[in-house]
Image (cartoon, rainbow, N blue to C red; front, side, top):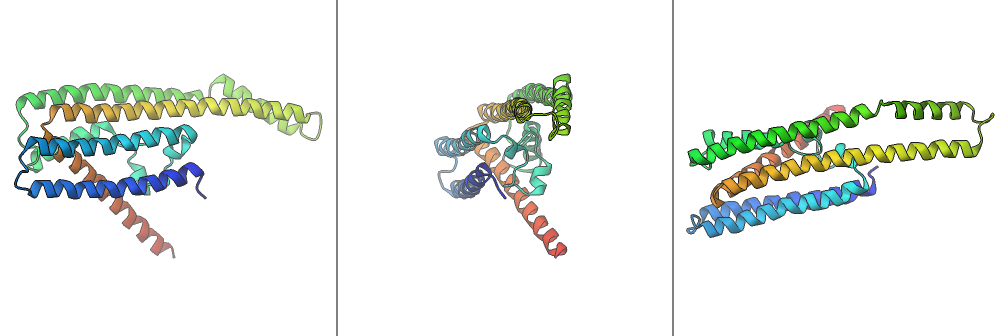
Length: 248
């Protein structure tokens, strides 16, 4: 059974994904148009694609504030998509691998200049350092689960539960439950911090690359990224369906 946040975000995500497919059709239409080499046309499309990404993170942050755990185990994604998540989303370093693949295997980014390549490499190194900071923060949050305060709290609750029906009063149990609730809230705040740090690195990556690319290159990159994500989603849905068929 889905929580309220899971229900609302699943509905939003379905619509957001559908909108992504519509935007890909727009990109294809522009590429076939006689005026497709007009930078202003591509800049307008790039703005639409960028706004589409911003809409996702705006809605995500508002929903995550209500239920952060929903985004660490997202029910709106397939198991295949979940397997490749990096702190609730795509790993920024993957964007640079995509740029390289598009530069070598496709014509859409083959025109990158030496100056652009140098800027991309500089950005990649900065983003790698940012990723390391996020991972260290997550490690800190994970280790905090076993710090002395948490262990003492677990022991306190254990003693209270053992004494239930004996010497422990309902007020003692309520006090322990209150302390557990406070501790849990602290852990969830920590996870929300990690998610926002990771999302900021993702957004920094996109903005950095878009600042380096020409309007046409930016559209080609964002549309290729969207197509890749949609393809992974379709593969995940197909695999999940096949597993269910074998199960029954």
